Length: 169
Image 1 (cartoon, one colour):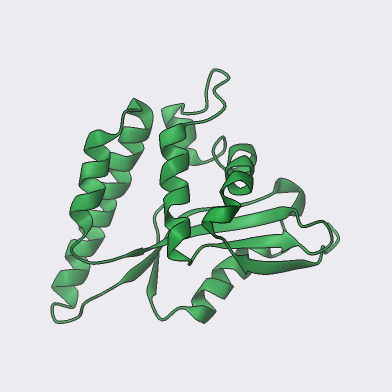
Image 2 (cartoon, helix red, strand yellow; image 1 turned 135 degrees about the vertical axis):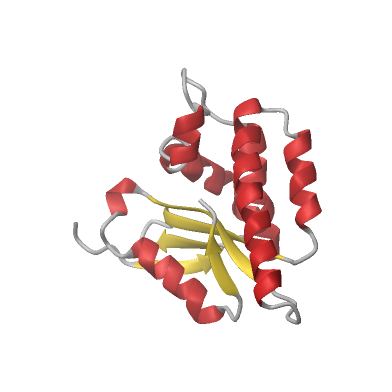
């Protein structure tokens, strides 16, 4: 694939409509947990609770997009959120109130992993208040894959962050 000029930019809440469209086309159908739970099966076009979950971190200002500099089209995204120790109860409550049974199972699984990671980190570093940058979702348009966009999004994250990075799914 020929190289396409792109720029890495911060994702914001203003980008939500384009990001949801991108995620519906390139992430939600192919994501392994979604496929296993059949979230987008039988012609279903979206999972509103999952979309809200994926857009919520945009307000933290740490998520990124790779944008074609010629067309302005999103070529890839990496959605991240800052995990703050002691706030794990919020994720547990989100699982309990999730109305979509398939997405609730995904939340239950990822929350369980997150709780285990938090517990192990507290045990390893009891005197350190650890904040983590968690990658919640990442995807690249299939037409732009194998051009280094996904790697560039992760590398950009590492270069501007003093926070440890965890990949959840």
